[in-house]
Length: 232
Ligand SMILES: *Cc1c(COP(=O)(O)O)cnc(C)c1O
Image (cartoon, rainbow, N blue to C red; front, side, top):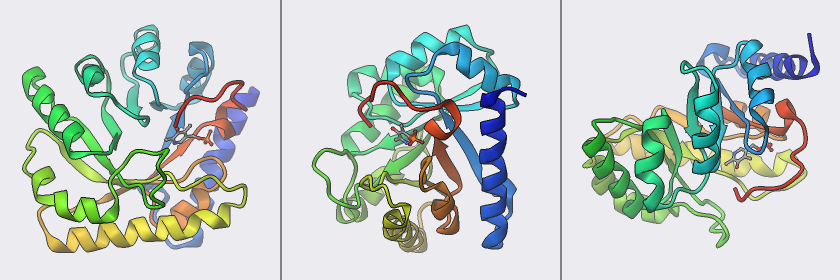
């Protein structure tokens, strides 16, 4: 056992424990290992420890890393996506967590059609209305729902959020609760079931699980501290 596989196992154990504490099936929660800024070598160690699902926040990094790694890995894009990069990235990703506007959703739908793909997507909701972050406000999302559901190439999984960072993970809980309640409300309206919630990072993923996360995005707790920050 090396340090990375130990850390990965520790996160898996904590996911299982958090799920059991709140009466959820641990198998209903996916671990997205966020490998942004880390080299292919580190990703290989995680693969050797059984991890197949990886998240990156830059198109360029996925394009650089994916060809050097086994083809059976699944890549999720979790960072902001510019329309002019959709065509490049779509063939390499299983899911996009950062559909933060109707314009982007339409571009992804159109280009997925041209490429013959059906990408899984999460709608990013900017619950704190932070100007530094992308995403729909709850109000915009309610107003855009029909237009989003009309995009037949998008396999809409559910909602995603990135709460404002606070060293105290308890501060994330109200955002996670809000995202789940918004999902419940929208699912109730019909049109799409929205079964999934992408929420929770290294410092607050257990709270996210308690609030209904189905995929947690964990980077530094697996790979170590990042030596430089990339834009979220
Ligand atoms: C970097 C990043 C993560 C992982 O953050 P850690 O604190 O390293 O776990 C999760 N989600 C998004 C959108 C990110 O950009």
